[in-house]
Image 1 (cartoon, one colour):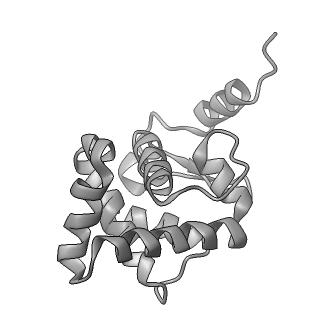
Image 2 (cartoon, rainbow, N blue to C red):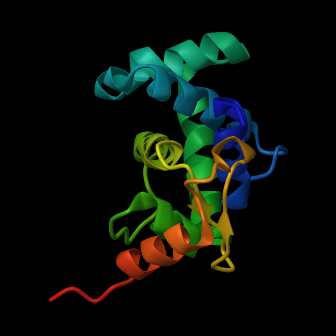
Amino acid sequence: MGTMEQIEREIQLLGITKRYRGYRQTAFSVELVLENEDCLYNVTEQIYQVVARRCSCGSSCIERNIRTASHTAWRMNLPRLRLIAGYPISAPPSASEFISILATYIQRTSCLPFSFLPAGRLWLPASCRASFFTPSFFDFLLDFLFADFP
């Protein structure tokens, strides 16, 4: 799965459909951050303006549309948003924070050869299905991940 497909999948899992203008703009923004994290230091010039040129609109429209996407995620799938944020959030994230949350989550999960589906099942990409990843390995890994350490 390519990076853009991962980004779009996460956006959709948050309840943001392609009918939102901010859907594609959020995806482009996250892609920029994945290419260069330093974009987050100057969001207006290095993200909003770049995406605005690509979408033929103003940078303030980009920020507003991403903010709308963030609020939609807050309304539609708050548990997932809190999960991918990795820290407690008590209000809808700002547009730049939403971009950062998505980019960080995709970076974290793309480093792993597996991911957990909502039902608790384990999914393993075909490229990682080697003899190393045996059922006993996963049993060990799950025991380790969910162990109660003092």
